[in-house]
Length: 302
Image 1: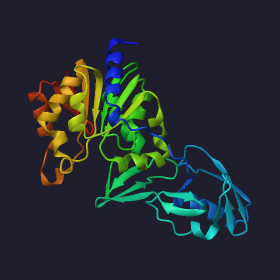
Image 2 (image 1 turned 90 degrees about the horizontal axis):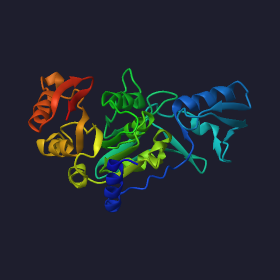
Image 3 (image 1 turned 90 degrees about the vertical axis):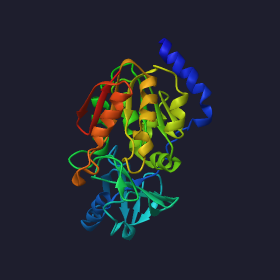
Image 4 (image 1 turned 120 degrees about the vertical axis):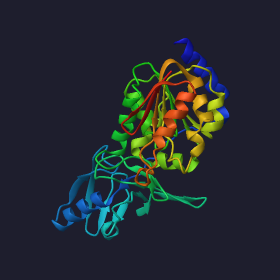
């Protein structure tokens, strides 16, 4: 075990009060695409059909008996309840009933939004989706960000704004030895627990901190991370995460030779606003070098 990893583990131990124990909730999930497959099969007189009940990760056999559909876990769902499902909603099946995977909290509406028949969903909060979904799937979007940060085998990685956890999971797939990921909204993590594509957050190599990033990053050791992936909400929703004050903390926790990838996107570009230009200016002022635009964001070096 490297010295830096030992230091990070000791620090994480002191941050137990912020640690979120991620426990996936395994319930059957269905979308309109899957429901239509079942309805079509029933119309053709089929007794069995294989579909995905975890948004494309695996396949399950359903049995059609008259006006009901039998699931592998023993639940019976009325065939009629599968008609007319909304395309932009993921439904969970509990007690034979379909319920949208959604939540309401503090005036905000959260939901898992499917973007295709067999792929990872995005998280949508009050109509704003948290990933790019045009020409790319949400998980591919996160993998592109981690690759932009050049995460490699053995790297200690900080992921700011966990969301559904795709960035942390992608970092592990590229070889990161440990990922510390920070999320301040517990409702977001509750939604992730229901999402099959988020189950990798339960990996022992991932530490989820339920805390405000502005506060908790200050408690992390100096020069501890090889890579930082900063994927904040848009500037209008979380301006503090685009501030020089926060960038100085990211610079401090990054080791010499480390890399920061900062997702910016293109909000405001139709009104002539260039958020990335301000980001680059502040990063340079905080000491980052070779600061430049890359797809979707800004890359900076220490």
